[in-house]
Image (cartoon, rainbow, N blue to C red):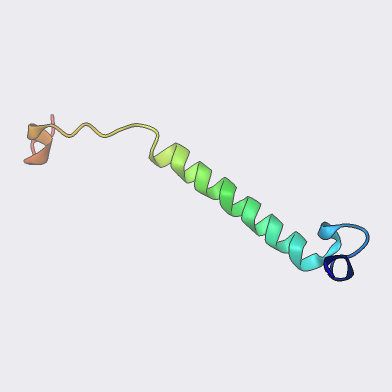
Length: 55
């Protein structure tokens, strides 16, 4: 049954599967880039900074 649905050349010969794969790879790259640039350095939260005194 499954062999009838899938094409003989492979699963990536279906255009929809190729588009979904490309979109998912691009989204993964964007998410990892955002994670690297925005969450790489931890923020120090001490009492002075909490009350608005930036030193």
